[in-house]
Image (cartoon, rainbow, N blue to C red):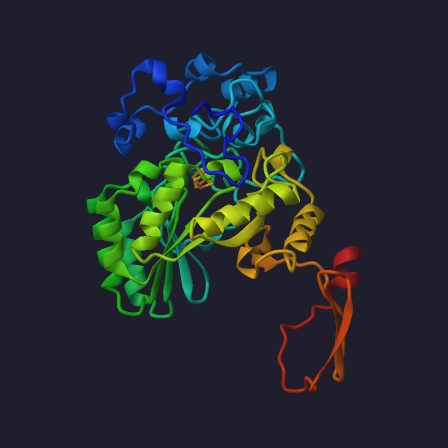
Length: 403
Ligand code: SF4
């Protein structure tokens, strides 16, 4: 199918775009379905881009000047979603560097989630009491221009990731308070089946680890990687959960839908994390189609992230108000399972903070006054709150505003 004819997957329909730009290069279906072929044939250079796309000046300069920030790499599968002539296309804005990446805004940070300062062992981030983030690799199948870990991911940025696996396992063995491990990076699913098997088996041998999650964009960039063999490996280590990362409905192709179904059939609960991005998904209609398509793929929309203040991402950031408007337009208007939580990962390492439309109009010991999605107002009796402990309300208002 021509990727940019009508029915290209921007709506509720699922489309296949293979082999797309590769048909004239003799990419046989057999090779196309080989995930290693997909990785070997990624688009990584200006010349390869220009073979297929007409770049504008912002993109051309972006490719030439942003190479020491984050590498350019796009799998053939995902590259087929990029149209040849529209620099403002939502997939193109996520993947093709632009000159704006070299600009610095006053709020930009190299490590917006404050991970480096919470790394007791290289590659292991322990910021919350009972869970850790395990950065197992700095490589991904393709690179997103807004990546919050661009300081290490792809291997060309300011810092290098040198995960020390043995030290990390020893740390986890000693820290019995850790019950939840999130494997991320980079993307663990670009490892071989054997390496994933060994990694999960080692983690599962630590008895106090109850829950293992994998954060991955591989099912979206490289659905060919989700082989029956990989699913068989993963299914040995339940409870194993997975967070995928889809930002736009077009990313949910027929191949991706089938890959997600294979994962779901292997018993893996699937959630999705989207990043709110200007010109990509910052409108209610796009988000509504996306969350509905995710449910069809058996994926629960989990988070929408306000874009982190990562260096060079100001052109992709939206207002916070836009995210609140989107949640307002989903909650009550569609299936509850389809409504993700909008969060800001508090700059500097404060963790995820839920951001919601204001549904509580008044609350005291006797009643709570609330409004629903239609703006209708309701009262519910309160039973007193003397035994209820809330997090301390900081007397920060004046202190913060006037310090
Ligand atoms: S897949 Fe995730 S870690 Fe990799 S570049 Fe994209 S956002 Fe960053």
